[in-house]
Length: 323
Image (tube, rainbow, N blue to C red):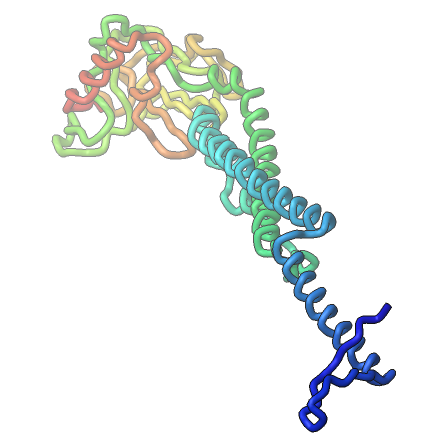
């Protein structure tokens, strides 16, 4: 039964029953509906602020996971880049140095990247910048590793020729010199024995008796034999390959022919006193890539480290040449 309501009438001094029309009930219902809607809306807002629907929770967890994976991937890239740089350093400064090869060209290591905007499809997202930078790092690493692979292919080819190269390097003394006392003049500025002025002496002078054996200091081919009355006198030039040539001067005679292949330690001639010479000796030179270098730096195959130090000292102290 509906609840009855009354109101006081001051004119009649009586309480009179309130009558409601259909319109009144309609307005009352609308007020209740509006109030309920407001309260419901506030409730939804409060719920959304403190509670998330399962799909939103799932997406946020997935985004957090993917960001963590990007961070982990960049950490892995740090490790790989360090490893690649270590390989590059060893390749240029150790492996290639062993074989006397120049470092792999830097412009080939960096390579080129085509396209004006290769990452256009990755733009426009919350993590676009981070993802693009990661992609760039991966691209740089790929180019580094491709270049390193090509460089190692060259090193492998050098390694295949290692034995041949080691046998070809002029690594022994050209005359018997076990007591290391035969070096009469070293490489560098020396007093000329005839002109008595300082001149560049581009080899080593070994004293020896006429007829003492002269040895090829590395495997090679006889490039030339010449017999002159001045200068080097009777001399032999060997071509060893890998940029090395050696010259043996002031011989009494040679026992090899142009074009003949020789082995390290093989007798190629005998000590003499031909050409511009003030006494029996062998003048010995080493050329590396067309430049005359100090032969003493290559005597490592037939002497001990202590003997080598002694040899360096003797070569440095010999001030007057014999030719």
